[in-house]
Figure (cartoon, rainbow, N blue to C red):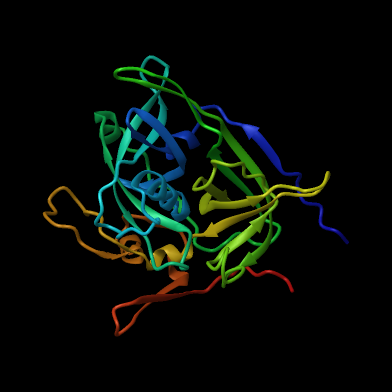
Length: 301
């Protein structure tokens, strides 16, 4: 008997909703011209996640390199815009500086960490609660909800302000297939899962939720080629991010960066992970970090 899955939806989302406080738009400026690259999601104090390919596209376009960067060292002209309602009830964009970028070895995952620095006092005084992360992919048949800004345009620039034309959308769909060992060796060599949710261009790096927790980031989409066909979309799973070495300053008294795995950061409570007990980190003699995750999600043969 064919499963009766919910019909995927793609709906415009109010800019002053809960999710728009966490989901941010990544932009950069060169010669007073603004460029929009994708999305990120704030998961904890000064910590955000984005798609690695979004960050590398920024490097290629604005730095003139081949996209290779040195995680945690280079400085970037990249900002994350958080849309919030101010005291007057108007929507305003608050800018976070992207100070540093942390990623694992190529092929580990399409997810990277960003270190954010506030530019507005309210970003410190009105710090949002940390998001809950779920490392295990949703089960096949599970309903996911994703968010992202697509087709963003710069409408007007002035001496001290910029007006963006944003299209915030929420996409829902059903998990169709899970690839805990990667889908292939080239396009999607990292752990991911397939869904029929619609992800439009510009939504890469946006958050994906299952059962109230962040379960991955928007990675890629193949739109239908025929009427009545489904979208073929992919979400990067979260569990490989626990093996990434990060250098976030633990508190204001820390004089130096303290590098550790994201797994250790989660154990210390700086990142809220619901199923951290299923993750096992295995340091190697050569200094590399590997890990194993006991996934409870399976794709039927």
